[in-house]
Image 1: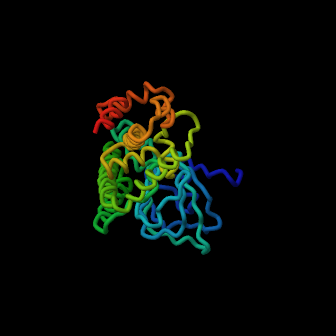
Image 2 (image 1 turned 90 degrees about the vertical axis):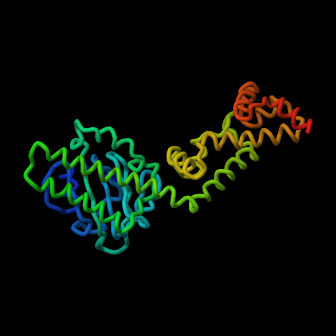
Image 3 (image 1 turned 90 degrees about the horizontal axis):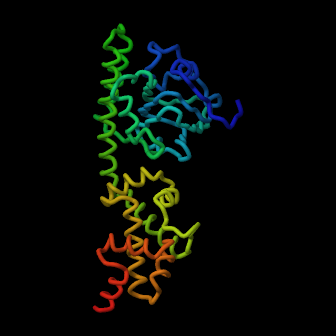
Length: 308
């Protein structure tokens, strides 16, 4: 396999063998302790792709991780969620032995067949590249998560019966629900530290229009803004909704309206000239957008402004 390709691990059994552990008790779910891993740092792959869900809860982690194309803030966090077929890059530490500690729950999608969680799990945003920050837990919350993980472990280590899957999936569902609650809290409690993103958004839009930076005659898109901030569009939208109560698209539109009002009130530019300067291909589109956001047409706004 070429050195630049990630290591594809198809089964939980293959993962156990990769980290030097005995085969799992259950082929579709396994709870591991990082401190039990038996491999040296210089033999670890630089990137892996697992064909199953990975939920990591760390107490210490001495490597730098990249999640998709971004560096994950896992060294400062406590929990991270990875969906099947997502690329995780790992930069090993300089020391010979990797002394990570914590828990790693591996869940194959086949465990979720014919359960409501099979569809529900895909809706959790923390299983996406859009969340590149780890989930921070209190000591009490960490204990609750570990307890649930160990409940799953106890269930698959016991004698398997026709309710074993239901019990394990129910425990997993409960843990993911708690994780969603904790992420929602994290978005709220970290608002103040995220306010710099608003300044960066304002700066990007100011520069976009100051430099007439049009790839074509268009308004900057949500994707443009997200890429400029090195965030995914969904993550940016969720964060902005928490900070301001509005969508990213509306944030952009508000900026466009602000610039439109400035040009309408301080210049003699025609509607066509203003529309083009703001990224609209047609003046009619500009007028429709302006009126839907202000209840006045651009001409009515200009006339009412000059009448004051």
